[in-house]
Image: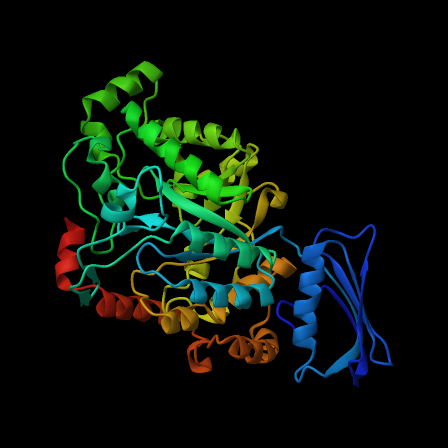
Length: 473
């Protein structure tokens, strides 16, 4: 049966029947999100489900069972996910997508049984959450003067916030599909847009502009400034009121430490706290945010960079994306939990020459040094949008690779390339009905030897000489 992701248990009786009617029964003793589909010879379908998610996933499977919406195989299916967390991330700080485009993406991800939408809403290049408490974020922080990502330049001003009404519309739409929306307000780095509105929260207290190009920037929040924590917690309070879900992402990645090292107030505070390392100093601040949000019933997610400081609050969840050592495994082995998003397998903003579909399918959902696989809550497929400024490009970069991540997140294991692509043919037809166009099949498969040339092409296509000189500095 050509379903993506593949169902756990299937019994196929060898012929198709005309679908007659569908009966739904709330079952007892089933796993969370579990469902059972039984199709009889008279064409009646009986769906037994554990909860609303199980019912919705059964309906998504029924769509995939029938190529014409009328004929279905005579079969019995029992199905449930291997991982609780099955997420996709969309970066709207660099390039925005409208509400209709985000809804269409939710339809596609619901078909694949994703249940978490990680919405990256703040970064150096723009602020995207409407604020009533601090309206300066809506004007100053939301708009960059121009855009210069790689070799592509746009001279006009860019950006706005999503209004609270728009955000609520997205939350409601996703909720109807059992997808929880998880907002990300990235701190204490990737905060140029925030500091453009509040330069007094930086160590240098000098004027800062919303960034116009990609990169990692020195501008970070001054951790010794009491107002920094006050403003940040006020913003998080407003975000918590808007997003009803359990999780909130607070970033923590790619945070340069030079400004803290040069700041007398930060050095004095570190000495008072008895902290020797700047990674631990960052977490002393992050832990205050985690404590505050825990008090509001929220569980925080951080990028694995934060786990490099050994004092990160174990109530947080670490999202593994890239690291040279094994702090994520050490964090999990000492009681923490992980979400896996390995960039060399799952980052779909990289061309297929760099991360082909066969590579995405090959990732085993584990990391080196992890004692207990149960520490892994699940998987997430991210897409960053420095070089993606159209919905068409977004779709072809995500699909079919997002479907491959969904396959592993649901099944808990890798999939054979030929088997997966044969099953995906049917899924691709359903995606086209939604309005989603996957990448051409000629792009999907590459050998490992093609990756170096892929990287060279990526740099050539996206990095100008001007940017390379800037990055080297």
